[in-house]
Amino acid sequence: MFQKLERIVPRARFALFLRKSNKLENKIWFMAQEDFRIYAKYYDQIYSHMKNYEKEAKIVENTIRKFESEKSKTLLDVGCGTGEHLKYLSLNFKCTGIDINRNMIKIARDKVPNARFNVASMIDFKLGERFDVITCLFSAIGHVQTFDNLVRTISNFYGHSAEKGLVIVEPWIFKKDFIKGHIGLNIHEDENIKLARMSTSKMTESKRIIYMHYLVGEKGEVKHFTEIHEMLASDCKDYVEAFKSAGFTKVEYLTDDLWDGSRGLFIAKK
Image (cartoon, rainbow, N blue to C red; front, side, top):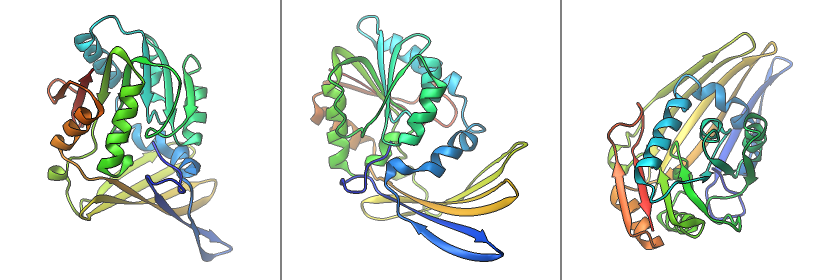
């Protein structure tokens, strides 16, 4: 889902504030994207209350069966995160997952032992094989940040897609739907941890920027840290253009009969 700092996309900045000996010390961590240890550690807790991965995976599978030209057997999930979708998709497909965040890949490997995983960027990964289906879900595509990188990413999907392959992409929030200053809140609590995340957003001409603040209480301490996500600013027509530029001849955008909170699905075929 993420990219190294020395490459051109995408970058994020972490600020971690730790309380030590009753004195607040500010420690700024500028971290390469694949080192998002904190983000990976709490990812499942943050989204467990928001998403029904089993239901979403079933809808994705039904979509594959509806649009496939022949029976699909192999599936690549790009920006697979901690492997929650693959936990269910791997029951009916031979699955591979990639993500730039090596800490998420470590979690995914433990969670889905019957799938293969690689640490790689969605923009320029090279796996040396083609897949019947390529998915990129939960708006992971938004982390490419720019339209040029979107084209490069979709072109990479094209190169890894089988002759009659299918590509399914859930887009990041369209420009027309993005709400400047929107405040979001996610809360998780169990016997070991109390976690609250609040987010707000702003717009620039070329990017959508999300500021996230975390309060994490565990092991007798409360810690505060923030992260900044710089995301893609595009609309539906930009995605269609990217698919067409990559070589896909058939592109559809679905919004009906999907899961709550879905941002739609682009379906592309060669």
